[in-house]
Length: 297
Image (cartoon, rainbow, N blue to C red):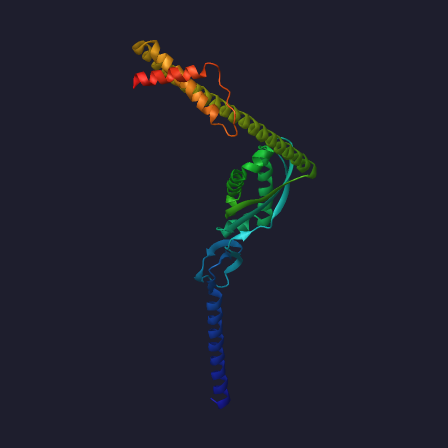
């Protein structure tokens, strides 16, 4: 065998091994899939669902299995949506909503629904209209938390077949048309005016009640003072009566004489009085009082 033949045979064997090595490397690369933590891979075999690959290193059959869909499992937020709704008392409102969800079963999401965001938006709009149609406007404004819970629960039930979990559903705002807003503002102003009038009337009523209580208290105090004074006068009269009963008429005359003397003293003690006018029997009164005092002494 010539040198050329040996060289040709050697090169042929090396090419075969080289091609075999390349083929093995390609098979390994095609059969190994490293899935990120935030994703799941949907694998098909000859056009049919084969498996769902989770995060980490996964192995598939090269050339038979194919990663058809790479689905993110991160939580998603739909853009804020605004839809019209009519309450049970025929008021048109515009409701702004927002929904958060995440895909938990990618095989359902990719094979059962084409546009998941649009489908959720349509579902939320229908549920919001249905729920608000059962409520009056005041209930919509006051029971927003209950409305949010109802929307979230119903949306979760509707999208369960799509492999989706609704994490949050929020009602961002409830807007009214201009005519309804103007009517509500007028009603609010009227209610405020009514409350102000009621408050003023209650204040006036309270002031009258307090004044009446004050007058009643003053009258009671005056009556009590008169009663005490009357009791004192009655007691004095009783003392005089007892003295008269015990000492006879002389004690009464003695008291009268003392009062006359005291009256004359006060008359004479006045400022600027140079002349004192005495009754005709004044001296007799002094004499009688002196005699009585002398007799008692």
